[in-house]
Amino acid sequence: MARAEDGTFRPYETQIDQETAERILKDALRGADDGELFLERSRAETLVFDDGRLRNASYDAAEGFGLRAVSGEATGFAHANEISEAALRRAAETVRLAVRDGATRPAPGPAPTNRRLYADSDPIAEGAFGPRVELLREIDAFARALDPRVIQVSASLSSSFQEVLIHRLGGQIIDDRRPLVHLRVSVIVEKDGRRETGSAATGGRHELSRITTRESWKALVREALRVALVNLEAEPAPAGVMDVVLGPGWPGILLHEAIGHGLEGDFNRKGTSAFAGLLGKRVAAPGVTVVDDGTIPERRGSISVDDEGTPSGRNVLIEDGILVGYMQDRQNARLMGVAPTGNGRRQSHAHMPMPRMTNTIMEGGDSTPEALLGELRDGIHAVGFGGGQVDITNGKFVFSCTEAYRVKNGRVLGPVKGATLIGDGPTVLRHVRGVANDMALDPGMGTCGKAGQWVPVGVGQPTVLIGGLTVGGSGD
Image (cartoon, rainbow, N blue to C red; front, side, top):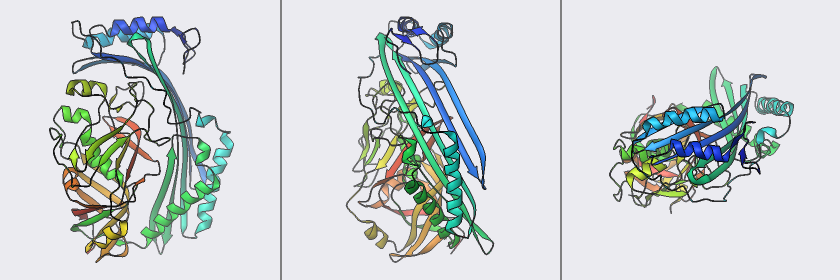
């Protein structure tokens, strides 16, 4: 999506000259505090190979615009899949209904940047359809040949390319082209009538070829099989209040859900977050530093600019246990009297932006993983997580473990299954007793939902020792 040399927008084989778009936008935002015209074209392809055959092959293409006018806490928003002057004018009439009368001067646009965190090549255009199907078939065969206990294999390969153009008043044009790829493998193993599952995934904002090399996908298959075989030997998890060591990388999803959402600006402005009104206060144990960083090159949650045109940033949220900031879009930042942080994200042109996480990370500390495990008298080492539920207002969560181990007197005894971690984010932060020096990012598989919108995200953390979590299980 780009401007032609004559200044005409031609993102979807339509023609809207820049002067017309600017005139309509100016009319729509007359008296508003802020707003923009967001144009998008996106394509997505997903292949699913399951039980020895191609089960699903889908290709989706979408295009359109979203026009938004913001006035105080009110927002007027209209969207359409048709890019035309008539559609834009109808949208302008709609969004003006939310704008109060007055001589408000719109907020200045974001500072421009030439930074690109990922290549602008379309991963769907890499190669033909047939070789991608054959790749999944090869993954299936390789997994089955690795171990006779493998009875079922599922592999999915997806790629997408989103092109956005944000038109702000004064002729400011901000564009971004966002590739995204993802490969996931799941296996089911069986022994003596018992079945268990293991899965592994990888991805990011880069070429599809990065994750389809033999070295890459074979490592993924072996990891999925390893997890499944571990669970095949696992005993029922114990229940009770005990200390827990979280592994590095993907276990940061607990940080994302139980703590990250509570640090988004809209919840704090409205006073519905457990962290509302606590800026400058201690909310975590010393040594705990949490950042949201959308600037890490090629990561799944990274964005060169957010969906309002603000450059992404490395935003420190908690520093050595002290709450120092929230994640902000433009509207909530203005209402709270602070600067936007590059966290205004939306699922598509048909959605309004809101404060969302990018890559949410707990930074490493001074301890070692071995030392933290050595402190466990009777507890759980949680290495992998599946689904969970969180209440944003109080941070209460329930998370299921996909890979976990029983630890007694500093010794890892063996794997356990059916473990769930129960607690609340604010308490977890205060009960952190150790942070290791092995911070790792997740392999590139996170997707975050909020208010019905889904966006790709990343997480990361080191090994962390937490005291006094409730563990749900059926064992002794």
